[in-house]
Image (cartoon, rainbow, N blue to C red; front, side):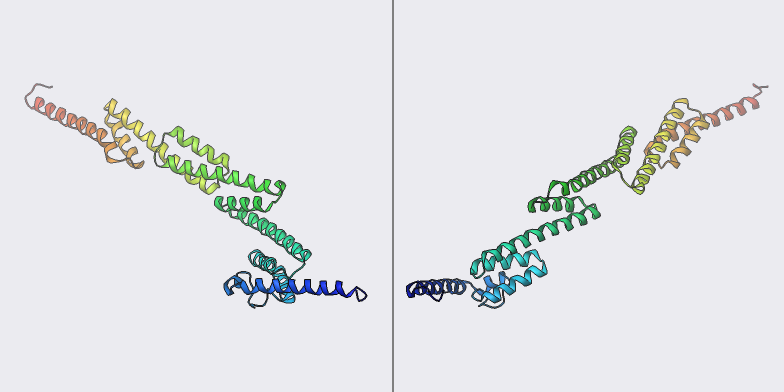
Amino acid sequence: PCDAPPLHRAVRRASARRRCSARASRAKMMTARELAAFGLEDPYALKDESLMRSTLRKAMHKRKVTELRRVIQGAETSGTLYNIELDNARRALELQRKADARTLIAEAKASADVAMMQLAISEAEAVGLPMGELASAVRNLEEEERRERARDGLRAVACGATLAEFHEALEEGEAAGLTEEELDIARAALAVEEQSLVARQALQEAVASRSIPELRAALEGGTQANLQGYELFDAERVLAEEERKIVVRARLKDALLKNGRLS
């Protein structure tokens, strides 16, 4: 106040000069690179209260977390702004981080990408989003992880497994909610495997019976089922033996007829 004693006015002026001097000293100690890290182009920005305030307002308006964080750090270093201004900026930063976390969660859920969903949930937890907002994202992540395991299971059985394992993997894929396209591919692969199994069993039975019609039918079924050559080998060998027997018998019969031994 104007009516304050001269000594009090002098103390206040001296205190103000010391604060200004301290701010200027801190600004002089900042390198150009450090100033740029705070998003400040003007090397005198840390000493200029109005410029610092303007830079902070612009950062708050842009709502870019990285830029806002840098400017807040610069304002804290400069000591030029009031605490209430910094508190408002910190609250704005916190709110923006939460908003960005919500956006990231929405994008992750839409992408159905497990790694992205894990990152989004981790970021949301870090910024303190309430569990009520995270619950659906966590459920989606668990469901997508189950689908990924189901896909891995179907890929594994496609490389070789029993029919029981194939059926189990397909049932898990259906329960996990894989797309019809994915399931149709698995069902087609299962049908091929079942056809192959039926063909192998028919070949085994035909070899055991040594019946030429059964052997020929089993070999045809094996070929249609795309069985490997080694799987057809036994049936082909037995068929050749049985056909040779027929030829031998026919020749023997002809010879006996010629010699008059058969009527």
